Every structure is written in C-alpha cells, then in structure tokens.
Amino acid sequence: MTPIQSASIPLIIEGKDLIAQAKTGSGKTAAFGIGLLHKLDPGFFETQALVICPTRELADQVSNELRRLARAIPNTKITVLCGGKPMGGQLASLEHKPHVVVGTPGRLLKHLNKGSLTLHHLSTLVLDEADRMLDMGFLDDINAVIERTPDDRQTLLFSATYPDEIKSISRSVQNNPVNIKVESRHKENQIQQAFYDVEDQSRGSLLLKILQHYQPTACVVFCNRKQQCDEVANSLVQQGISAKALHGDMEQNERDLVLTQFSNGSCSILIATDVAARGLDIKELPMVVNFELSHDPEVHVHRIGRTGRADTKGIAVSLFKLSEMPKVIAIENECKQDLPMEDIGELNTSKAFKPKPQMVTIGINGGRKDKLRAGDILGALTANQKIAGSAIGKIDRFDRLTYVAVDRRDSNTALDLLTKGKIKGRQFKARFVK
Image (cartoon, rainbow, N blue to C red; front, side):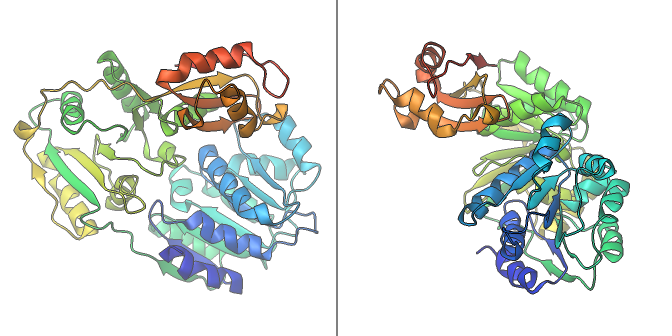
C-alpha cells in the first residue's frame, strides 16, 4: 500500500471521519474506494456512498477506479452524475438506485431537487479534491448537498492542499475528524527542477527554447488563466508543434477529446489551468512547465507532482520574473530545498522541436450505449493479423463515441479495417481525429 492508503484505510474501516492530505499520484482514490466498498451492502439497493468531485474528468477517473476495485463484489452499481451530459440518461440510470454515486456539486444538487436522487441511506460521503471545489466556488452547492445526507454518515475529506477554508468546512460537516498528512514533497532526485528568469525575453519564445533543449515526448504546460492557455497553444501550433489547450471555458465534449488525445499519446503538449488538469490521469509524464508561477507554493508542488510518479524521473521547469523572487523563496521553503536558477544561454536550441506523436486517434461513432467493449474493437483491428496488438493503445469509451489510439505507422490500415469491416457484426463510422 502507498503511505496514504496504509494511514487512512484502517481509520475509514473503523468509521472515523478523516481529513487526508496527499500529493497527486499518492493512491488516495483507492484509499477511500476500498474503505467505502468495504462497508457496502450490495443486496441493499439504495445509495450508500457519495463521492463529490470538482470536475467531470475527475469524476470519470474516480468512477473507473471504483469500478475496477468493485469487480469482486457482484451486482455493484456505480453511477456518474455530472454536468455537460443530458439529464435523460442519468434519470433512467437512477430509476434502479445505484449503490455508489460519483458526481459534481451542481448536477448532484439538480437531481436532489428533482427527487431523482435520494441520500436517506447514505453511510459514506467523500469530498475529493476539496481545495479545488472551494477554488471553483462550489461551497454553497456542497453545503446544499450535504444538508440532504444523514447526520450519522461518515465524512472523508481528501485534498492536495490544506487552506484555511478546508479547516472551516471540516468543522461544519465532520465529527472529530482524524488528520492525516503524508509526505507531500517529492524526493530531490526524483524531479529535476529548473528555474529560468524570463525578464529579458517573452515567455513564449523561452518556452520554445526549453522544448528544443529538453525534447520531451510529452509535457504539460501550466498557465494561470484560461485565455493564456489558448494563446500559448495557438503559438505552438503555428510553430508546427502538436499542442492543445484545456480549460473550463471549453465545451465538455472538447475537453473529453483533448484529455483523451493527450493521455493516449496522440498529442505532445497540453496547456492547461490547474483545475482542468485535475482530471488528467497520466502514469508517466516526463515533463511539466510552469509558464507562470502559481500564487500558492502548495499548488506548485501539486503541479510538479504530475511528473516523477511511481519512482520514475521527471523534469519540472518554471519561468519567473525577478519581481517574483518572493514566490520562488516560498516555493523553496515548501520544497525544503534550494532550487537551481539556470542560465538561458546554456539551453541547446540547435535541434527543432516538432515531434510527431507516436499515436494517432481514431474516433468511432459508437460507445457504451451501443454495447461496444474495448475487446470488441481490439478484436476488429487484430483479427486478420494485419495489425499487431502492440500497435493498439488506449481505448476510451463514452456513451456514443469511442476513441482508439493506434501507432502512426499502422493508422491507415486501422482506419480501413474499421470503416470497411464490422465490429460485433455491425458497421460503424470511423475517422481520424485531429
């Protein structure tokens, strides 16, 4: 078990309320997932556990992990209730009450007000990424949801950072919570940090030089503003670089597609805000860049924690102005280490940075509601042995869409197989997704 799991699971099983602080990639979803599933009565068809998340992407990620953990428990129903999806399908799903609900505050409140969701028998409430939910202004909605839950429930609060607002919400919704904080700093030799003074040149041109020097196969660039994400992405695309923006002003289907393309290796650079990146689930990310420093040193630690996970090495580069030295010092204090200030003149920019991603995404006009499984698509692509199974990457299924990553060298053959052949005896439209 990871430190957060070994520290929290026994307490969760004992029924204690919990405030748990742990960095990205620490295994906290499995920690509260194992705890809430342990208490579940699968023969009692009422909602017994609720997990509230700040974004739909994170809710999808959490629900997938809970389904994986619940495979050994027969007939366990887990339902996702998030905005950006039609109410009709969710209402139909709620007619047969789920054991576990995962959702975002606004959509959960809509269902509660409509009466399609009831929480009278709730035994476990989880607030996941509570700090981000407060940043996004969800406090009133969260409180309104919690008012509909029994007083004797168990409340688990998981957060990457621990601002005063978290302490305040804990006092109002928890009963004698146990505080757990596992090591949030990263090993000095696990993530190689580098700080570059951007005073004498534009951030955009310096970002390009950094990419040319480090040549990452994939990289997340963090921006503080949504408009800045679009500007940086457009600038990189004009340079011929595979880059996409991700932020809260985008339509949900656009965000789904961008996350899918980056996580399956068919997009090289993702430019994202902190909140949008919370739904990103990449096990091995070689590099992150802070296009601007975060206002909170704890958020900086959370950002760089996207790389160097599971004992892999990572690179974290940050751009700053001399006027921001107080922020740099605060980050050094948080990381408890001296951070290297690098010389821009030593960046090797002799090699262009225009790597074509190894994978290409193909979109199929069929998904979960068409009873398409990942194995069906894999079988359709490999049955005649024109494509090896190793050339097929991630397969992401949505209600009426499926995205499959295929090695670039086999992508034309794969598209031909999907458009001219059949999946489960049926023909589906397929296309390259750019």
